[in-house]
Amino acid sequence: MRRLISSIALVSAVGISLAACGSDSDSNNGNEEPEEPQITASAEAIDWADAFCGNMQDLQGTLDTPTADPSQDPAQSQEEYVNFFQSMGAGLESFGTSLEEQGAPPVEDGQAAYDEALQAITQARESLDAASADLADAQVENDPEALNEALAQFETSLEEQQSLDVMAPFQENEELGAAFAEAENCTAMDQQ
Image 1 (cartoon, helix red, strand yellow):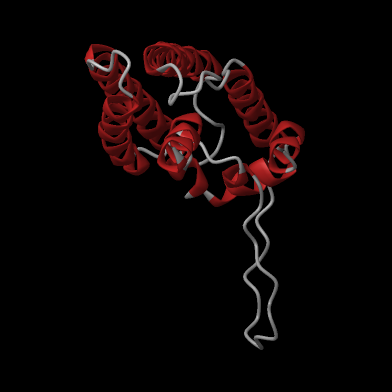
Image 2 (tube, one colour; image 1 turned 45 degrees about the horizontal axis):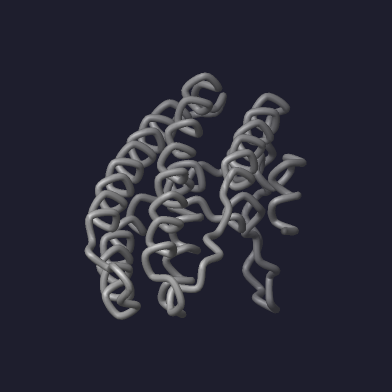
């Protein structure tokens, strides 16, 4: 079941890393090379990042981890996991809608990053929905090993989602990175 926990973590993240919202600046570590000039974020970019992270918190707040013991009740566990993953798919759709309503970040190249992130959300949701349907169709009855096999197949499907990192296009933008580091909702997520 340890693998299952990693699946849940992967699905909960679906490319949305909590740590990704914060600053990734490193100290000079004794290196004598001069530091690059510090990028500052505009107030508009910070507001955008704050709203983005608020929507992310909303998504994460809707998810309840399954509680049934797969070794005791595989069929109930299967149902709980399918429901969890389906709610994650619905949450991603809602997150995508919120992002569409929010619009592109007000930074240089913000529209391109925004378009790429929306595409990643759509692809992740579609893949999650397909993998959830396969899990729902698995014949586990009262066989914990059959459930483990179905969950392992589900996890394999989800591991492909690591390339669909919703934050990546935004992290590549230095001003947005600075905005995420300063936005209250984002720093609150870093502390969770």
